[in-house]
Image: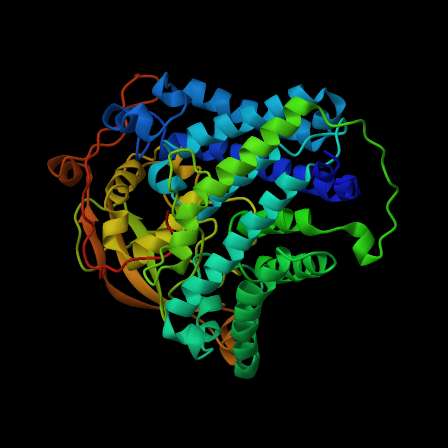
Length: 509
C-alpha cells in the first residue's frame, strides 16, 4: 500500500524515537535510585503489601509474579540499559522485528513499575510515557519507511494532551477565563525552577498575555496538528516553542519534553524549508502493515472514552481507562492555588519537648525549604518525594498513606529515605522526635531579594504533625523499617497527619 509509507518523515521518526528512548532512560534511572525508600520491601508503600491486596488483573505486571528488591532493581536497570542502547541507535542496527521487540520490552518493564508505583506513580506523565512508548513500537526502523497511520496516531496523542489541558482550564478555575492565573502559577506550582522567580515578577500585562496565549496554543493550535501540511508542521513548531517556555518556567518531570517529542511526529522537514537527503526503503512487509493497521483500529475504538470525557462538562484529567494505560485522557492545572503551602519537617535530639526545644529542619532537593536557596532545575528527572510533598501541603488526605511511614524512617535515619533528601541535620544519631509544620511561602520582591538575599519569604501557619517519637508511632500502628537484610517488610497502616485543611489537588491519575 503506497499510502501507508511516509519516507519523507524519517528525520521526524528518528527524533521521536531518540527522545522517547532518552525519557525512558531517565524514568528507569529514577526508579532504580528511588524505589527502595518509596515502594521497596522496606519502603513507605511496599510493593509486596500492594500486590497482596490488588490482583494482577487490576495492575498487570511482572511484580505480581515475583517481587524482591533485587528483582525490581534488575528490572529498572535492564530498562535503563535497553533505553540507552536504543538511544544509541540499536533499533536501526537490528532487524525490524527485533527493534519492535526491544520497544515492547521497554513498555512491559515500565508498565510493571507504574502499576505497582501507587501514589508515587499516579501522575499523567507516567501514562503518557507508556502510551507514547507503545506507539513507538510500531514506528519501524531503518528497514522500513515511517508508517503514516502511526504518525497520525502520535499526532492524535499530542492533540489529546494539549486540547484536554486547554479544556480543563477553560472549564475550571475562573482565573483562566479572566486571564489572571499566571499571577499565581509560577509561585504556587508544585516545584518551581531557577527562573520561576523571574517569571513570577513579569509585569501583569505579560501574565495576561501568557494566559491568553495558553488558550490559543492549547485550544486552537492542536487542531492544526490534524490538518494537512504545511499547517501541521507549523502547529507542531508552536507546540514545541510553548513547551520550551514551560521547561524554562518550572519542573514538570518529563511531561514537556515528551510533548515535544510527540509534536515532532507532525513535522515534515521539507515543509519547513529544511534540506534533508531522501531515503529509499524497500517495500513494507505485509505483517508490519497488518500490525500497524490493527493498532490504528484499536486506538480508534479506545478513543471513545477520552473523547467522551473531553466533550463532557464534567471532564476529568489524567485518567487511564484501562489497566495498561493506552489511549488516556490528559490535562493539568484545572485549578491554580493562590497561596503556597509547604510542609516543613523538623527533628530534635532532645529527650523532653519544651517550648525552648531547638528544632532542626530537613532539607529537600527540589521543593522549597531554605528561603535563601534558589530553586533548582531537575526536570526531566523526577523527584517523586519532593513532588508529592506539594500535594501534602494542600491535602492531608493525600498524605495519609505515606507521611507517617516517612516520619518513622526519619526517626531511625533510614539510609534509603535519607538519600532522597538534600540535608539530614542528624548525621550521627537519629532524632528523638520529628514534627511537621505548615508554612505559607511567597516569592520575595526585588527589594527583599537585594536586602536579604532570600528568594522566598515564609510564615508559620499551623501545626501539621505534632512532635512524635518512635513509641508514639508504634502506638499508632507505625513502626520503622527493619534493618536491611532481615527480609521483613516495613509495617505501616494509614495514619492522619493533622492541622492542614483538606482540598483536592490537580494532576493525579
